[in-house]
Image (cartoon, helix red, strand yellow):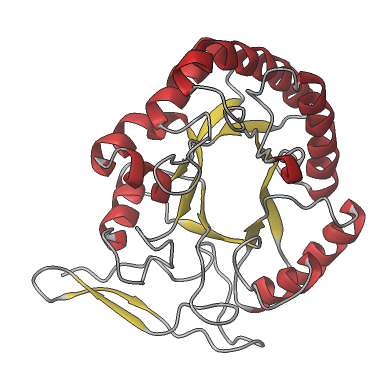
Length: 300
């Protein structure tokens, strides 16, 4: 049973630090061995690669560009009329992934167009998405890269997002039928849309290429108050044989690395997991195969 490995999402963590190079240094000093970032495109890829090397980090995930955010775009994969822009963005993402040594790219589906009825445009948007995904799978295969599909909840986070449940994403992946396209499981979104996390994790984990976590409903760190039992979920991922990274994609409480001291207990009150206090850099915490000792469960 492989231990879980954690990656710092630099689009969310260390928000007090300007720029990705500073956040890379902070993540490395805090003990992470891997990071992910939504959109690294404001920085030259060579500079980011150098900063990552100096921090002793590897990049494990980036997103395709969002499109024109001033016009409300949040990904282009399924958006009719934006196929050319999606493919241009894919080329840019591949260039960055190659320079950064990043093996995975989240292929953002995008939003239902403003003023359109979701049900009325669903079939057209799926056709566009399938065409773009088949193209992307071929481009990524040439570079030995993996593309990921992430459902984003439409109840709280993004009511207009096209891809919003693991069932919808899995059905699209099955239609495309390319082995280098996989599912991205953000437990925050999955809980909000469908719940049934045990069943859904067990059903879809064989096609999952990356996991992300945040507490529900506040999207804080897993140790913050909320409805999710993360010691149980982390143990479930281990028991089911998940070998990828778990991305820390949450809104931190306070500055930088926010975990602090947290004592997790199961319902009997016995110690279930101890989350150690992370001091300010430089950190004395040793590196190891698990990343941080965030999910070492003390059972018994």
